[in-house]
Every structure is written in C-alpha cells, then in structure tokens.
Image 1 (cartoon, rainbow, N blue to C red):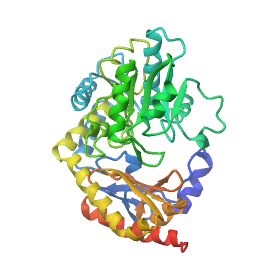
Image 2: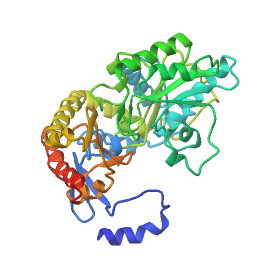
Image 3: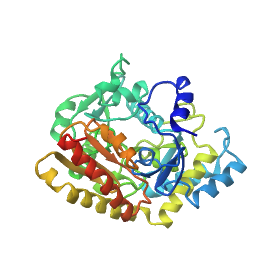
Image 4: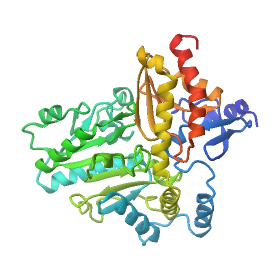
Length: 405
C-alpha cells in the first residue's frame, strides 16, 4: 500500500489532533520498525517511552496471545488474580503499600490529584491546594491540564481548575516562600524528570529537601513517574536515585510495553484515602493489561534491562557529547541532559524540523519544548544501535545549526 494513498484515504475521518508525519507504520522487531512501504527505521522514541521491550518481543507476544485466548476484560466486580500479582510486584519494587490500576498516565495523575484533595478534606481543609511546577506536564484532562505548566496547551480551555500553586524547579526556597503561612497546602506534585517540559531532572538534593518539607508539614509527596519510571533511568523509579520514597506515585507508559495501562502506587499515608465508591476505572486492571505488566517486569528482571538502560544510556550520552563537542563548546548545543535512556539535547534554536529529517534518514525521535530533542528508546537498545542513533542524528543537528537544513 502506498503511504500517501493510505493517509489520503484515512485522514478525513480522524479528528485533527496530532501533527502527524506522512508515515504509517506496519510492524516492528526489536528496536526497528517498518512502514507500509517497507522502509526501515531505528526507533529511538519507543512510542514516547512506552515500548519498554521493543517490538515483537519473543516472550511478551506469546504471553499476550495466551491471555487474549483466555480473557481480555472483566469488570472490577470480581477479583482479577494478576492485579494482585502486579500490585505485589510494584509494592516490592517501590517500597510502598497499595496500588490502584487504571489505563493511562492521565488517569493515574487525575487519581493522584483526587487523592490529594480528599487527603485535605479528611483533615478538615475545605479548599485544598497542591504545589505544581513550571514546565510540568501531567495530562490533558481539565484537572491535569490545570496542573500542567504549559500555557500553550492550556489556551482555549479555560476556566482552569483552581487549587494549584506553581513554583520553579529545584528551588527549595521558592517552594517555601510560595507556601509560607498557607494552611490549605496538602501536597507537592512533581515529575522526577520532566518529559514534555524538555527532559528537566529534579536535582537529588532538591528531592530530598522536598521529602523533608512534606514530612514536616504533613503534605503528600506525589511523584509523577509516568515517563521516567519503569527502569528508564537505570532504577525502577527515577526518584529512587535520591534515596527517598513517594507517598503517591502515578505510573503508565512503559509498564505494559505498549498495552494501555496506568497505576497509582501509594505509601502508608495515602493508601487508605480511597474507599469503595471514591474512584474507579472501567478498563483499569483488566486481565490483558495486568498480564502485560506482570510479563514486562518479569522480562526486565530476567534480562537485566535496568543495567542495560544505565549502561547504554551512558554510552549514548557520551557518544552524543563527543560528536557534538564543538557545538557544546560554542553553546549552539546548550546541554545534553537526562538519565539512562531518557535523554534530551537542548539546542540554541527551534528544531522541530529534525523530526521529519531524521525520519527521512531512518530514525524516529521527537522534539519537545520547541528546541529539545527527546530520545526515549526501548530499554533493549544495544550500544551498537545507540551509535547508529548518533551517526544519523548528529550530522543533521550540525546542518540545522549551520542553517544548511
């Protein structure tokens, strides 16, 4: 099938909500995908940090086929055995206590906001307020959009939900000043590494200081690990590098290796806030999604993918820094940042054109915050594939910066 024909035939009836490339993907294997015309691409985007195990994994696919033949969905009126298995595993990996399952990161973040509000109401606070961050992204529902720190994507959807206090990243003094004397604050809600905001990590010392402040003031520390969690940084959850625990931790994306899944993991201070009737999700915790989560974690452990993410991520970051050394020295490339296989390359000029140029050259990436190249490949990526990313991407960066592209 010709791609242009496919797109022309299919696009009139699909709501125009995405700035799509003229590519229709057909199938994948490992870290490579092919379009309907047979062109191959190295996948350094992983469905935006979703395809943890790559494509057509030889152990995941048979497990999902087995589950589909047994049961895809049943409602939460009944016990679902793999819910308990996956919840037990997430509790073990996080050091927390209880899990609620949903289907997306947006749902997980929405549930976190509800937990924080009910936490406040249970303490007698009529108008709870939650601290959120500049450049944050937590989703596109009205509540999560209100928590998000991007005026461009908020535009046209007012009035936004009230009850948020916005602060800059990595400034404990700013956090203290913004909340000084305010008895309505109930939680701090942050991404351990901002994804859509431009791959902006929270500093380890800052995370520790926020944890201490939340303990002192009886606030919930809610850490959004939707994009940076599930082994992407070389630990199961990015905030674990700081040696702290969250009270509430939304997850999604890589937890199911492509099967829609979300989760809210809660520690002791938040685990009993929701009671029957307070929250729910029709598709949340369905048998197929739970099997995907169980198998994803099992394969990650068996294959040492946390170590691989840390090792290959460092190799990729080092190779990018070497290839772009002169551009870093002149600040045409402002910074290469991130952890593990969640890396951002910030340029001195907008670079959205690179998405299409890289695709033309057989590489899938994304650009976020206008001038930050985002690399979030499957956690199975090899060092040789990382080198291939560098060999395709860096010449195109150089051309763009010289104005030749």
